[in-house]
Length: 342
Image (cartoon, helix red, strand yellow):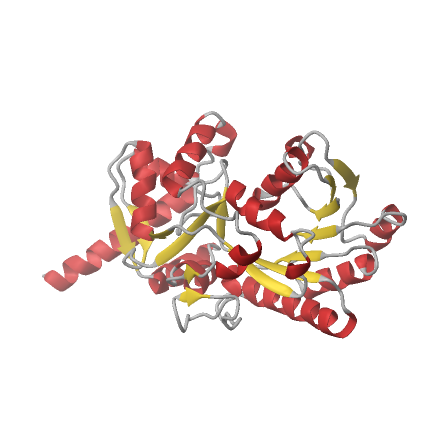
C-alpha cells in the first residue's frame, strides 16, 4: 500500500513513517521542503515541494495516487481546503491530524470520548483545528471525501521531555534547574490528570487506522492508557535525573497573566489544555486497533529521552530569559506571602 505524508519529519510522523517502512512494508512518500531529510528511514521516498505552492504540488503529483494521504502540518481551514482540491479523487483515505486540545474547555467531565463537544475559548490553535475538522466532515457528508480525523494529546519522543511550564527554547532549562537544585514551577497544585504518549506507541494506533475502512468518516483520539498527575510527571523526571524535585506550585491563571507578556502563551497551553484534568477513553480506537496499548510507560520513556539528549548537546538549549522569569515569579509570590504573614 502507498502513503503520502505532508510533512512527515515531526515528533509524531517520524515514528509512523519508520514503522510503515521498516515493519509494515508500505511504500511511503514524504512531501516537504527537504529540510530534515536525515530523519527519513531508508526506503522512504521524497517529493521536495512547499505544500503552500498548490500549483507546484499539483504538477508533481499529477500522475500519482495514494491509498492514504496524511496531513501533519494543516493548521488553518485554507490548508485543508487546498488539500481537498489536491487530493480529491487521488486517495482512498485522507487522515487529518487535529488536536485533543480541541475538546471542550473547561471540561464538563474529566473522562473524554470522541463524542465530547469541541470548544476551546482559550486557544486559537485549537479553534483553528476545530474549523478544519468541520470543513472536512462537511466534505465527507456532502461529497464522500474519505476523511479520518486523529486527535493526539501530549506525544513526545527521545528528543523531548514533556513539561507543563517551559520557555520558548523548550524543556532544557527546566532540566537544568532540577539539576542545579532550583525550584521548578508546576501549574496549579500539580494534581490534575494527564496522558503522555511515546511516539512509537502512538505509531501503532495510527498505522492501525491507515487503510482501515472502519475509520472512514470517523474521529479518534490516540493516547497511551497511562494516567499521571503533573506532580508524578515531574517527580518521574527528577527520579530519572537522580535529583530531588523542588516543586513550586503556581496557579495557571497567574502563570498566564505573567507569562503571556513574554510570549509563552500559557493561556492557551495551560488554561486551554494542560491545567485541565483529562482521562481519555480509548475504547473506540481499541475496537478497531486492538494492538494499541502503552508499551513504553513514562518512567521508561523519560529515561530513553534523557539518555539520548545527554549524547546530543544541540538539544541542550539554555533559556536564560525563562530562567530569570521563573525566579521573578517565585520571588514575587514569596514576597507576597511574607507581606501577608507580617
